Amino acid sequence: MAAHLGYQLHPPGGPAFGSDVAEVFGVRDGKITSFDIYFDSSPFPK
Image 1: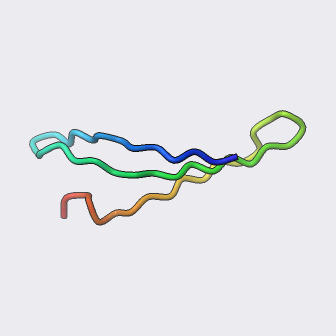
Image 2: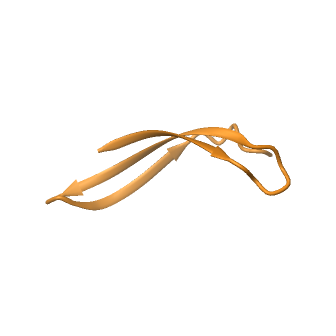
């Protein structure tokens, strides 16, 4: 199962910015067995 989400992040002392995220869940017998998150780090402040 996968979800595509958009987060609005507000770092302390810095401007807010958006980031798209893909969250991938492994499911077996109706229970979450794994969770992975993928994101592009380019919007994050350097």
